[in-house]
Image (cartoon, rainbow, N blue to C red):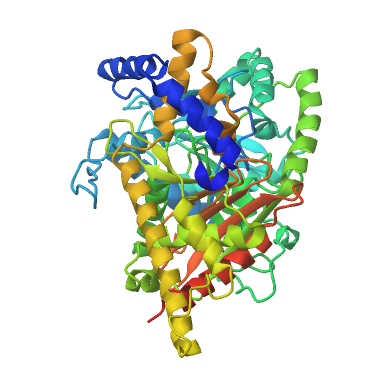
Length: 607
């Protein structure tokens, strides 16, 4: 707490902790409660964490929770190319599902820090066929059986929903050609329907309690109930989109390197908007089912990627699945993009029974979704100065290096550090997900302060005859010492987390144990410092991709920043987010500060 609180706040917190942890305090009793719980359960913390992180949060999923991933764009010439590419993705999904059902998924092991420990693979099995269900007070999850008899997907095009079976009763699994012909039918059918369908999917973009009530109303009709079951049990949702106009481009900053991938008037920031939220009610936000774990999105201009519901899995499982499917497509010898005709029955189009109260809610949902999208300040920034090759040459972990650049960028803008979240995998433990690396350390603060004082802190002259060059070199060496100290501390916190000694899940457990044992929350968890600690004004994560892809998300608090990053050998891709409604934040301004900070660090550490 020291680097992010005042002296008075810190002293109060220390006094509360001293009382809480004393032999007569509540702490030892709650600790024993958790130890007993650990002995009874596979993972004592899992549902505490899942509910606190996802199920109890009432915010809307797009922007606030669901990440969006942009994959390397494709070149489509005809609608047949779109259908064929969609079929190839579905084929990859089916092959992955079959591998899971036959228990052929390779066991992953830790690559460092007590190497070769097996890693929990549970989240890999939760990606396909799962769905989040809204609740008025708490959401829940639909998780499919390990082996499913029925394999189907839902395809959404122009707000029309179609159910495409992937196995036929009389002949087993559909071929890629047959799936392509089904998708081609949808691409030709949806635009020709006489009436604009109700964009039911836009209700899934509403705050969770509102959507839960709307869903209950929809389920009163048997037809709607069957539709919702088909959507929730589908392997994936495939969204066939219209491209967003160039007006969704972010406000970059002077001197920023242009996006690597552009299509027409679209840049990478524009493409990211499409994946995160769809662009609003006039574009593709109704062409979604945001509760669905995997929504794969294909635009007819070649932009593609996905939006995923975060509660079943971390990004690593999603990225690995998407990149495996993409690499298989790229390396495939079959370059046939035509779609042969097949005599399968056309896919079933889902019809909805819309009561008057839902019609009213659809109008309200369109307005509220558009307001939230208009408020999102999002910027994809490629830093071209260097990448992880240079960072490693400095004998520094690229992740620790980038985390310190994020702290320096914030300090340069605001003159202070703030509570910072970086996800740390806890998959060495059964059902392990993540704990929190708190990067805003005292050592990071001292280094950031020094970096922002010209060339560094003043150091006394060793003698009157010392020349300026020698003096400046000593100042530079002092800055390097502060940097190494900050890197060491960042690494220590990371290792503590991945080996199960992180503080955040433990504190969460003590908080929930207090509620369950006493019916109230101890003052440790109502103290001002606890609120400051858990208001992450900087929420970060490394999303490493082997292809030229990237994943981004919105801030987790109205006055904060979100920042994902992907270090490549010679560049770094950042996805920076903020809200326009907060006058103190700006995604492009933070990206500019990142550029300056990374340049300063290179000048300090080179040679």
